[in-house]
Image (cartoon, rainbow, N blue to C red; front, top):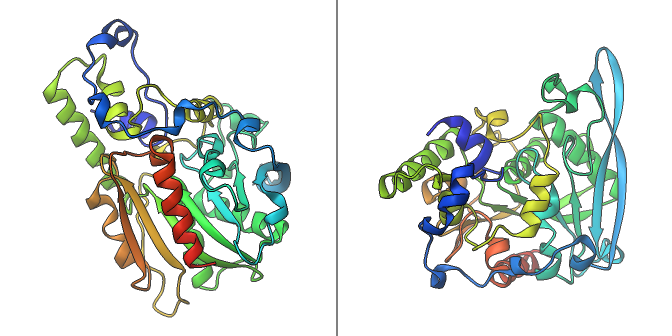
Length: 347
């Protein structure tokens, strides 16, 4: 299995079934129905269905392009905006995965954590934060306007513009990488602003090393191929076993894929990233919870090092029984209870 398959279709992109898979779908080996947790993905999660209490907006972010400064819109959505300054339940700031897969698939957080203000935003180049120039064209891309550091600059500016004085941070998959790097930047005193405080952080299905998780995913794919060498169903079998264990692909996930970016997309864009602990003189990072699914391609080996990369011992590892990479969409109640309980400890 090539690295391209892992990078473009496993980590955070839709599993594409070849045409032959359509004919073979009835023979694809799937986990037994009893193996699937009660999924919230059977619900219709249109934006209005997720929450009738939300606010949309955008801020301007800048990039140097061709020797000039260019502005782009970074769009956000706030669930329960009137609670954004709550002293009893601090808001949750959500970072989506990819890179390049927008927040749609995480909107169900507002149903399973309904009483807290939640801030979603689409990172530059995907979803409702498109890049409307040649860098949005995969055949004529300018990758220089995309990077982890530039994404952190955008994140800091959003926090400042929204006036988030205290908040919790949540990152799913690649979003967890951004969350860690943001907290590392803050702890090392390299922030562009100093008017906010992160109370806690949740990393959901986030590896400490991208190369390692690609290798692991390839091994899991090979194991599935050994069980059944029908390559026309292989990607879908991987999806059902290790990516999202639902009988059908949840609509929020499809919505995200339909609005995904085309340039800075997938683990190929961050293939050399691995977590490094902050400097010895850095301030203490917030307490953390690391979630992963029992069947996740982000395996135990891919997350166990998180305990050594935070500069304290308050890192909690949790396994979501019966779930894989998208636990929120596989068992929303269990997922929401875990998230809400952890956040409440640090409000």
